[in-house]
Length: 467
Image (cartoon, rainbow, N blue to C red; front, side, top):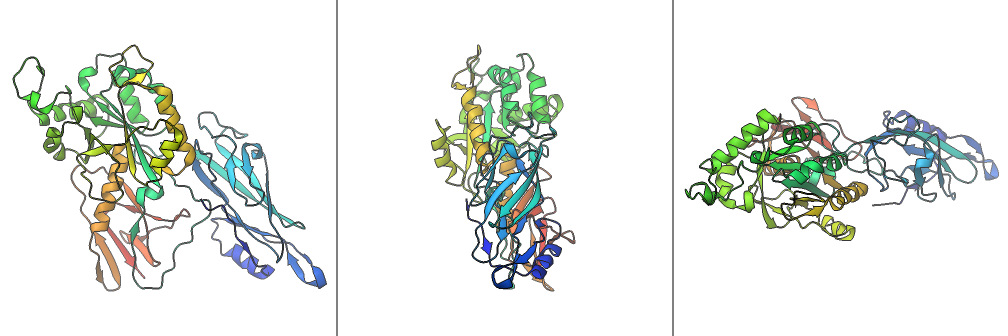
Protein backbone atom coordinates (compact mmCIF):
# COMPACT_ATOMS: atom_id res chain seq x y z
CA UNK A 1 0.00 0.00 0.00
CA UNK A 2 1.25 3.46 -0.87
CA UNK A 3 1.74 5.31 2.41
CA UNK A 4 3.06 8.48 0.84
CA UNK A 5 1.04 11.65 0.95
CA UNK A 6 1.06 14.56 -1.37
CA UNK A 7 2.30 18.01 -0.38
CA UNK A 8 1.34 20.41 -3.07
CA UNK A 9 2.72 23.87 -3.73
CA UNK A 10 0.98 26.73 -1.92
CA UNK A 11 -2.19 27.97 -3.61
CA UNK A 12 -4.01 31.24 -3.19
CA UNK A 13 -7.03 31.44 -0.97
CA UNK A 14 -9.22 32.03 -4.02
CA UNK A 15 -8.20 28.69 -5.57
CA UNK A 16 -8.75 26.91 -2.25
CA UNK A 17 -12.26 28.33 -2.11
CA UNK A 18 -12.85 27.13 -5.67
CA UNK A 19 -11.68 23.62 -4.80
CA UNK A 20 -14.01 23.56 -1.83
CA UNK A 21 -16.94 24.67 -3.94
CA UNK A 22 -16.18 22.06 -6.62
CA UNK A 23 -15.79 19.10 -4.26
CA UNK A 24 -19.37 18.00 -4.81
CA UNK A 25 -19.87 17.25 -1.12
CA UNK A 26 -18.01 13.93 -1.34
CA UNK A 27 -15.08 15.14 0.74
CA UNK A 28 -13.82 17.90 2.95
CA UNK A 29 -11.46 20.63 1.78
CA UNK A 30 -11.06 23.12 4.59
CA UNK A 31 -10.95 26.86 3.91
CA UNK A 32 -7.49 28.12 4.93
CA UNK A 33 -6.73 31.01 7.19
CA UNK A 34 -4.34 33.58 5.76
CA UNK A 35 -1.55 35.32 7.67
CA UNK A 36 1.34 37.56 6.78
CA UNK A 37 4.43 35.52 5.92
CA UNK A 38 8.04 36.52 5.49
CA UNK A 39 8.36 39.80 3.62
CA UNK A 40 4.65 40.48 4.05
CA UNK A 41 3.53 37.75 1.61
CA UNK A 42 0.25 35.99 2.34
CA UNK A 43 0.69 32.47 3.79
CA UNK A 44 -2.28 30.13 3.89
CA UNK A 45 -2.97 27.58 6.61
CA UNK A 46 -2.82 23.94 5.44
CA UNK A 47 -5.63 22.91 3.12
CA UNK A 48 -6.78 19.42 4.17
CA UNK A 49 -8.53 17.18 1.64
CA UNK A 50 -10.33 13.97 2.66
CA UNK A 51 -13.80 12.39 2.64
CA UNK A 52 -16.25 13.53 5.30
CA UNK A 53 -17.34 9.94 5.90
CA UNK A 54 -16.38 6.44 4.83
CA UNK A 55 -17.22 2.81 5.53
CA UNK A 56 -14.88 -0.07 6.35
CA UNK A 57 -15.43 -3.71 7.27
CA UNK A 58 -14.97 -5.01 10.78
CA UNK A 59 -11.80 -6.85 11.73
CA UNK A 60 -9.64 -4.38 9.80
CA UNK A 61 -6.28 -3.31 11.23
CA UNK A 62 -4.61 -2.11 8.01
CA UNK A 63 -4.42 1.56 7.00
CA UNK A 64 -7.75 2.67 5.54
CA UNK A 65 -7.18 6.38 4.92
CA UNK A 66 -4.28 8.64 3.98
CA UNK A 67 -5.54 12.24 3.78
CA UNK A 68 -3.73 14.88 1.74
CA UNK A 69 -2.77 18.45 2.55
CA UNK A 70 -1.59 21.49 0.64
CA UNK A 71 1.05 23.51 2.54
CA UNK A 72 2.89 26.73 2.02
CA UNK A 73 6.26 26.21 0.37
CA UNK A 74 9.02 24.79 2.52
CA UNK A 75 6.76 23.58 5.32
CA UNK A 76 6.25 20.05 6.63
CA UNK A 77 2.98 18.43 7.70
CA UNK A 78 2.42 16.90 11.12
CA UNK A 79 -0.77 14.88 11.55
CA UNK A 80 -2.87 14.18 14.65
CA UNK A 81 -6.42 13.23 15.63
CA UNK A 82 -8.92 14.36 18.25
CA UNK A 83 -12.56 13.71 19.04
CA UNK A 84 -14.73 11.39 21.10
CA UNK A 85 -13.41 8.20 19.48
CA UNK A 86 -9.79 9.24 18.85
CA UNK A 87 -8.40 6.76 21.39
CA UNK A 88 -9.56 3.88 19.15
CA UNK A 89 -7.25 4.94 16.31
CA UNK A 90 -3.63 5.60 15.48
CA UNK A 91 -2.36 8.11 12.96
CA UNK A 92 1.16 8.32 11.58
CA UNK A 93 2.30 11.87 12.40
CA UNK A 94 4.47 12.01 9.27
CA UNK A 95 2.15 10.49 6.66
CA UNK A 96 -1.35 10.80 8.12
CA UNK A 97 -1.96 7.06 7.63
CA UNK A 98 -5.01 6.20 9.77
CA UNK A 99 -5.86 2.78 11.21
CA UNK A 100 -7.65 1.13 14.13
CA UNK A 101 -5.58 0.30 17.21
CA UNK A 102 -7.59 -2.89 17.64
CA UNK A 103 -9.74 -4.64 15.06
CA UNK A 104 -13.31 -3.30 15.35
CA UNK A 105 -16.07 -5.79 16.14
CA UNK A 106 -19.63 -4.86 15.21
CA UNK A 107 -20.98 -7.15 17.93
CA UNK A 108 -19.05 -5.12 20.52
CA UNK A 109 -18.95 -1.51 19.28
CA UNK A 110 -16.04 0.56 20.55
CA UNK A 111 -17.36 3.99 19.59
CA UNK A 112 -18.72 6.41 22.16
CA UNK A 113 -22.40 5.95 21.27
CA UNK A 114 -22.17 2.21 20.57
CA UNK A 115 -23.53 2.46 17.02
CA UNK A 116 -20.42 1.34 15.11
CA UNK A 117 -19.91 4.85 13.73
CA UNK A 118 -16.73 6.49 14.97
CA UNK A 119 -16.28 10.28 15.08
CA UNK A 120 -12.88 11.90 14.67
CA UNK A 121 -11.30 15.22 13.90
CA UNK A 122 -8.27 14.86 11.63
CA UNK A 123 -5.74 17.64 12.14
CA UNK A 124 -2.69 18.76 10.17
CA UNK A 125 -0.15 21.39 11.22
CA UNK A 126 2.62 23.05 9.22
CA UNK A 127 4.38 24.24 12.37
CA UNK A 128 2.60 27.59 12.36
CA UNK A 129 -1.04 26.94 11.66
CA UNK A 130 -3.34 23.94 12.11
CA UNK A 131 -6.32 22.88 10.02
CA UNK A 132 -8.83 20.20 10.87
CA UNK A 133 -11.77 18.35 9.35
CA UNK A 134 -14.38 15.97 10.79
CA UNK A 135 -14.47 12.30 9.80
CA UNK A 136 -17.15 9.67 10.46
CA UNK A 137 -16.15 6.03 10.04
CA UNK A 138 -18.94 3.45 9.72
CA UNK A 139 -17.91 -0.13 10.54
CA UNK A 140 -19.83 -2.84 8.67
CA UNK A 141 -19.93 -6.62 9.03
CA UNK A 142 -18.50 -8.61 6.14
CA UNK A 143 -21.93 -10.06 5.42
CA UNK A 144 -23.48 -6.58 5.14
CA UNK A 145 -25.98 -6.31 2.30
CA UNK A 146 -27.50 -9.77 2.63
CA UNK A 147 -26.56 -12.73 0.49
CA UNK A 148 -25.51 -10.79 -2.63
CA UNK A 149 -23.92 -7.54 -1.43
CA UNK A 150 -20.36 -6.90 -2.60
CA UNK A 151 -17.96 -5.93 0.21
CA UNK A 152 -15.96 -2.69 0.03
CA UNK A 153 -12.28 -2.78 -0.97
CA UNK A 154 -9.80 -0.52 0.79
CA UNK A 155 -9.09 2.88 -0.75
CA UNK A 156 -6.73 4.92 1.39
CA UNK A 157 -7.38 7.98 -0.78
CA UNK A 158 -10.05 8.92 -3.29
CA UNK A 159 -9.49 7.55 -6.79
CA UNK A 160 -10.06 10.21 -9.44
CA UNK A 161 -12.45 9.24 -12.23
CA UNK A 162 -10.38 8.70 -15.39
CA UNK A 163 -10.63 11.48 -17.93
CA UNK A 164 -9.48 9.80 -21.13
CA UNK A 165 -8.68 11.47 -24.44
CA UNK A 166 -8.24 8.49 -26.76
CA UNK A 167 -11.87 8.25 -27.86
CA UNK A 168 -11.84 4.56 -26.91
CA UNK A 169 -13.59 3.19 -23.81
CA UNK A 170 -10.80 0.88 -22.65
CA UNK A 171 -13.29 -1.12 -20.57
CA UNK A 172 -11.65 -3.20 -17.84
CA UNK A 173 -13.26 -5.38 -15.16
CA UNK A 174 -11.60 -5.20 -11.76
CA UNK A 175 -10.39 -8.62 -10.62
CA UNK A 176 -12.10 -9.90 -7.49
CA UNK A 177 -14.35 -6.84 -7.12
CA UNK A 178 -11.36 -4.60 -6.47
CA UNK A 179 -9.64 -6.81 -3.91
CA UNK A 180 -6.24 -8.40 -4.45
CA UNK A 181 -7.46 -11.97 -4.00
CA UNK A 182 -10.62 -13.92 -3.14
CA UNK A 183 -11.35 -16.56 -0.50
CA UNK A 184 -14.22 -18.99 0.12
CA UNK A 185 -14.61 -21.23 3.15
CA UNK A 186 -16.56 -24.43 2.41
CA UNK A 187 -17.83 -27.03 4.89
CA UNK A 188 -18.87 -30.46 3.59
CA UNK A 189 -21.36 -33.09 4.77
CA UNK A 190 -23.41 -30.90 7.19
CA UNK A 191 -21.61 -32.71 10.01
CA UNK A 192 -22.62 -32.60 13.69
CA UNK A 193 -19.36 -30.86 14.62
CA UNK A 194 -20.17 -28.07 12.17
CA UNK A 195 -23.57 -27.62 13.81
CA UNK A 196 -22.01 -27.58 17.27
CA UNK A 197 -19.41 -24.99 16.22
CA UNK A 198 -21.80 -22.97 14.07
CA UNK A 199 -21.98 -20.16 16.70
CA UNK A 200 -18.18 -19.73 16.39
CA UNK A 201 -18.44 -19.45 12.61
CA UNK A 202 -21.47 -17.17 12.75
CA UNK A 203 -19.61 -14.79 15.06
CA UNK A 204 -17.12 -14.07 12.27
CA UNK A 205 -19.94 -12.55 10.19
CA UNK A 206 -18.47 -13.67 6.87
CA UNK A 207 -20.44 -15.43 4.17
CA UNK A 208 -19.38 -19.06 3.72
CA UNK A 209 -20.75 -22.11 1.88
CA UNK A 210 -22.11 -25.20 3.63
CA UNK A 211 -22.47 -28.25 1.36
CA UNK A 212 -25.21 -30.39 2.89
CA UNK A 213 -26.34 -34.01 2.74
CA UNK A 214 -29.94 -34.15 4.01
CA UNK A 215 -29.46 -37.76 5.13
CA UNK A 216 -27.55 -36.27 8.08
CA UNK A 217 -30.63 -34.41 9.34
CA UNK A 218 -30.95 -36.76 12.31
CA UNK A 219 -28.65 -34.51 14.36
CA UNK A 220 -30.40 -31.97 16.65
CA UNK A 221 -30.79 -28.43 15.28
CA UNK A 222 -29.94 -29.55 11.76
CA UNK A 223 -32.59 -27.54 9.91
CA UNK A 224 -32.49 -24.63 12.36
CA UNK A 225 -28.73 -24.20 11.93
CA UNK A 226 -28.78 -24.09 8.15
CA UNK A 227 -31.87 -21.88 8.09
CA UNK A 228 -29.99 -19.40 10.23
CA UNK A 229 -26.96 -19.62 7.94
CA UNK A 230 -29.19 -18.60 5.03
CA UNK A 231 -30.56 -15.70 7.08
CA UNK A 232 -26.99 -14.55 7.77
CA UNK A 233 -26.23 -14.41 4.03
CA UNK A 234 -24.24 -17.64 3.77
CA UNK A 235 -24.87 -20.18 1.04
CA UNK A 236 -26.23 -23.71 1.31
CA UNK A 237 -24.75 -25.79 -1.50
CA UNK A 238 -25.68 -29.21 -2.86
CA UNK A 239 -23.60 -32.24 -1.82
CA UNK A 240 -26.20 -34.89 -2.86
CA UNK A 241 -28.54 -36.64 -0.45
CA UNK A 242 -26.63 -39.84 0.28
CA UNK A 243 -22.97 -38.93 -0.42
CA UNK A 244 -22.18 -41.97 -2.55
CA UNK A 245 -19.76 -42.42 -5.40
CA UNK A 246 -21.52 -41.94 -8.72
CA UNK A 247 -20.89 -45.54 -9.86
CA UNK A 248 -22.51 -46.86 -6.67
CA UNK A 249 -25.81 -45.20 -7.54
CA UNK A 250 -26.56 -47.82 -10.17
CA UNK A 251 -24.47 -50.88 -9.23
CA UNK A 252 -27.34 -52.60 -7.38
CA UNK A 253 -24.88 -53.64 -4.69
CA UNK A 254 -26.49 -53.59 -1.22
CA UNK A 255 -23.08 -53.12 0.36
CA UNK A 256 -22.28 -49.80 -1.34
CA UNK A 257 -25.17 -47.32 -1.52
CA UNK A 258 -28.39 -49.21 -0.80
CA UNK A 259 -30.45 -46.04 -0.26
CA UNK A 260 -29.36 -44.53 -3.58
CA UNK A 261 -31.91 -42.57 -5.57
CA UNK A 262 -30.68 -44.21 -8.77
CA UNK A 263 -28.83 -41.41 -10.55
CA UNK A 264 -26.62 -38.40 -9.97
CA UNK A 265 -29.38 -36.10 -11.16
CA UNK A 266 -31.89 -37.59 -8.75
CA UNK A 267 -29.45 -37.19 -5.85
CA UNK A 268 -28.89 -33.52 -6.72
CA UNK A 269 -32.58 -32.83 -7.29
CA UNK A 270 -33.67 -34.39 -4.01
CA UNK A 271 -31.18 -32.27 -2.08
CA UNK A 272 -32.20 -29.17 -4.04
CA UNK A 273 -35.81 -29.61 -3.00
CA UNK A 274 -34.73 -30.03 0.62
CA UNK A 275 -32.64 -26.85 0.55
CA UNK A 276 -35.45 -24.80 -0.98
CA UNK A 277 -38.38 -26.16 1.04
CA UNK A 278 -36.81 -27.04 4.39
CA UNK A 279 -33.98 -24.52 4.68
CA UNK A 280 -35.57 -21.56 2.93
CA UNK A 281 -32.95 -20.73 0.29
CA UNK A 282 -34.60 -19.46 -2.91
CA UNK A 283 -32.44 -21.53 -5.27
CA UNK A 284 -29.33 -23.73 -5.29
CA UNK A 285 -26.45 -22.46 -7.43
CA UNK A 286 -23.39 -24.56 -6.59
CA UNK A 287 -22.46 -28.14 -5.74
CA UNK A 288 -19.54 -30.13 -4.33
CA UNK A 289 -18.92 -33.68 -5.51
CA UNK A 290 -18.92 -36.49 -2.93
CA UNK A 291 -15.34 -37.76 -2.66
CA UNK A 292 -14.50 -35.28 -5.44
CA UNK A 293 -16.05 -37.75 -7.89
CA UNK A 294 -16.22 -35.99 -11.26
CA UNK A 295 -18.59 -38.63 -12.60
CA UNK A 296 -21.21 -36.26 -11.15
CA UNK A 297 -20.01 -33.52 -13.48
CA UNK A 298 -22.49 -33.98 -16.34
CA UNK A 299 -25.45 -33.85 -13.97
CA UNK A 300 -23.96 -30.86 -12.15
CA UNK A 301 -23.35 -28.86 -15.33
CA UNK A 302 -27.07 -28.97 -16.14
CA UNK A 303 -28.02 -27.73 -12.67
CA UNK A 304 -25.39 -25.44 -11.20
CA UNK A 305 -23.42 -22.30 -11.97
CA UNK A 306 -20.20 -23.79 -10.59
CA UNK A 307 -19.16 -26.97 -8.79
CA UNK A 308 -16.24 -27.71 -6.50
CA UNK A 309 -13.96 -30.70 -6.74
CA UNK A 310 -11.02 -31.68 -4.55
CA UNK A 311 -7.99 -31.37 -6.83
CA UNK A 312 -5.31 -28.94 -5.59
CA UNK A 313 -5.02 -25.44 -7.01
CA UNK A 314 -6.34 -21.89 -7.06
CA UNK A 315 -8.50 -20.06 -9.60
CA UNK A 316 -7.09 -17.18 -11.67
CA UNK A 317 -9.36 -14.16 -12.27
CA UNK A 318 -11.31 -13.87 -15.50
CA UNK A 319 -10.04 -17.14 -16.95
CA UNK A 320 -11.79 -20.12 -18.47
CA UNK A 321 -10.94 -22.59 -15.71
CA UNK A 322 -13.31 -25.54 -15.44
CA UNK A 323 -16.37 -24.04 -13.72
CA UNK A 324 -17.66 -27.54 -12.92
CA UNK A 325 -14.51 -28.73 -11.17
CA UNK A 326 -13.11 -25.88 -9.09
CA UNK A 327 -9.94 -26.73 -7.15
CA UNK A 328 -9.09 -26.60 -3.45
CA UNK A 329 -6.37 -24.45 -1.94
CA UNK A 330 -4.26 -25.85 0.87
CA UNK A 331 -5.36 -24.53 4.25
CA UNK A 332 -2.30 -22.66 5.57
CA UNK A 333 -0.68 -23.57 8.86
CA UNK A 334 0.23 -19.97 9.70
CA UNK A 335 -0.33 -16.36 8.67
CA UNK A 336 2.82 -16.07 6.57
CA UNK A 337 1.75 -18.98 4.35
CA UNK A 338 -1.68 -17.44 3.96
CA UNK A 339 -0.13 -14.11 2.95
CA UNK A 340 2.11 -15.85 0.40
CA UNK A 341 -0.88 -17.61 -1.17
CA UNK A 342 -3.01 -14.46 -1.18
CA UNK A 343 -0.22 -12.51 -2.89
CA UNK A 344 -0.77 -14.64 -6.02
CA UNK A 345 -4.02 -12.79 -6.65
CA UNK A 346 -6.21 -15.87 -7.08
CA UNK A 347 -9.37 -17.38 -5.64
CA UNK A 348 -8.60 -19.70 -2.75
CA UNK A 349 -11.26 -22.25 -1.76
CA UNK A 350 -10.80 -24.06 1.56
CA UNK A 351 -12.56 -27.30 2.51
CA UNK A 352 -13.35 -28.39 6.07
CA UNK A 353 -15.01 -31.57 7.35
CA UNK A 354 -14.90 -32.23 11.10
CA UNK A 355 -14.37 -29.24 13.37
CA UNK A 356 -12.54 -29.98 16.62
CA UNK A 357 -13.08 -30.44 19.49
CA UNK A 358 -16.06 -32.73 19.03
CA UNK A 359 -17.61 -35.99 20.18
CA UNK A 360 -18.62 -36.65 16.55
CA UNK A 361 -15.28 -37.01 14.76
CA UNK A 362 -15.93 -38.04 11.17
CA UNK A 363 -12.31 -37.60 10.12
CA UNK A 364 -10.14 -34.86 8.66
CA UNK A 365 -10.54 -32.71 11.74
CA UNK A 366 -9.33 -29.11 12.03
CA UNK A 367 -9.46 -27.12 15.24
CA UNK A 368 -12.19 -24.48 15.16
CA UNK A 369 -9.69 -21.95 16.52
CA UNK A 370 -7.50 -22.42 13.45
CA UNK A 371 -10.46 -21.76 11.17
CA UNK A 372 -11.73 -18.66 12.96
CA UNK A 373 -8.16 -17.42 13.44
CA UNK A 374 -7.60 -17.64 9.69
CA UNK A 375 -10.83 -15.71 9.11
CA UNK A 376 -9.73 -13.01 11.55
CA UNK A 377 -6.34 -12.68 9.85
CA UNK A 378 -7.92 -12.41 6.40
CA UNK A 379 -10.34 -9.74 7.61
CA UNK A 380 -7.54 -7.74 9.24
CA UNK A 381 -5.68 -7.40 5.93
CA UNK A 382 -8.56 -5.76 4.11
CA UNK A 383 -7.17 -6.91 0.76
CA UNK A 384 -8.87 -10.32 0.43
CA UNK A 385 -12.49 -10.70 -0.66
CA UNK A 386 -14.09 -13.24 1.70
CA UNK A 387 -17.37 -14.61 0.38
CA UNK A 388 -19.45 -17.64 -0.53
CA UNK A 389 -18.73 -19.81 -3.55
CA UNK A 390 -21.82 -18.54 -5.36
CA UNK A 391 -20.88 -14.88 -4.91
CA UNK A 392 -17.25 -15.18 -5.96
CA UNK A 393 -18.20 -17.67 -8.67
CA UNK A 394 -20.84 -15.33 -10.12
CA UNK A 395 -18.35 -12.45 -10.27
CA UNK A 396 -15.71 -14.71 -11.82
CA UNK A 397 -18.07 -15.97 -14.51
CA UNK A 398 -19.61 -12.53 -15.03
CA UNK A 399 -16.14 -11.11 -15.68
CA UNK A 400 -15.61 -13.74 -18.35
CA UNK A 401 -18.92 -12.82 -20.00
CA UNK A 402 -18.22 -9.10 -20.20
CA UNK A 403 -14.62 -9.60 -21.30
CA UNK A 404 -15.81 -11.90 -24.09
CA UNK A 405 -18.54 -9.51 -25.27
CA UNK A 406 -17.79 -7.85 -28.63
CA UNK A 407 -18.64 -4.14 -28.46
CA UNK A 408 -20.71 -2.54 -31.21
CA UNK A 409 -20.63 1.17 -32.07
CA UNK A 410 -23.51 3.22 -33.48
CA UNK A 411 -24.16 6.98 -33.47
CA UNK A 412 -21.34 7.60 -31.02
CA UNK A 413 -22.51 4.94 -28.54
CA UNK A 414 -20.46 1.81 -27.80
CA UNK A 415 -22.50 -1.10 -26.41
CA UNK A 416 -21.60 -4.46 -24.90
CA UNK A 417 -24.19 -7.23 -24.63
CA UNK A 418 -24.04 -10.59 -22.90
CA UNK A 419 -26.35 -13.46 -22.01
CA UNK A 420 -26.37 -14.90 -18.53
CA UNK A 421 -26.02 -18.69 -18.37
CA UNK A 422 -28.60 -20.93 -16.76
CA UNK A 423 -28.51 -21.08 -12.97
CA UNK A 424 -26.95 -17.61 -12.69
CA UNK A 425 -28.08 -15.84 -9.47
CA UNK A 426 -29.86 -12.53 -9.78
CA UNK A 427 -28.71 -9.23 -8.32
CA UNK A 428 -24.99 -9.64 -9.04
CA UNK A 429 -22.68 -6.84 -10.16
CA UNK A 430 -19.26 -6.25 -11.67
CA UNK A 431 -16.88 -3.39 -10.91
CA UNK A 432 -15.33 -1.77 -13.97
CA UNK A 433 -13.31 1.23 -15.14
CA UNK A 434 -13.16 3.04 -18.50
CA UNK A 435 -11.02 5.76 -20.06
CA UNK A 436 -13.32 8.69 -19.40
CA UNK A 437 -16.71 9.23 -20.97
CA UNK A 438 -20.01 8.06 -19.50
CA UNK A 439 -21.14 4.52 -18.74
CA UNK A 440 -24.88 3.86 -18.73
CA UNK A 441 -27.37 1.05 -18.21
CA UNK A 442 -31.03 1.33 -19.17
CA UNK A 443 -30.37 4.92 -20.21
CA UNK A 444 -29.12 5.99 -16.77
CA UNK A 445 -25.50 7.09 -16.17
CA UNK A 446 -23.58 4.99 -13.66
CA UNK A 447 -22.04 6.72 -10.64
CA UNK A 448 -18.30 6.70 -10.02
CA UNK A 449 -17.31 5.26 -6.63
CA UNK A 450 -14.49 7.01 -4.74
CA UNK A 451 -12.78 3.62 -4.36
CA UNK A 452 -12.13 3.57 -8.09
CA UNK A 453 -14.89 1.88 -10.11
CA UNK A 454 -18.37 1.84 -11.59
CA UNK A 455 -20.78 -0.94 -10.57
CA UNK A 456 -22.43 -2.73 -13.48
CA UNK A 457 -25.58 -4.83 -13.07
CA UNK A 458 -25.20 -8.21 -14.72
CA UNK A 459 -28.99 -8.67 -14.80
CA UNK A 460 -29.30 -5.82 -17.32
CA UNK A 461 -27.18 -7.79 -19.83
CA UNK A 462 -25.99 -4.66 -21.65
CA UNK A 463 -23.72 -1.68 -21.01
CA UNK A 464 -23.27 1.52 -23.02
CA UNK A 465 -20.45 4.09 -23.25
CA UNK A 466 -20.32 7.56 -24.77
CA UNK A 467 -17.31 9.87 -24.98
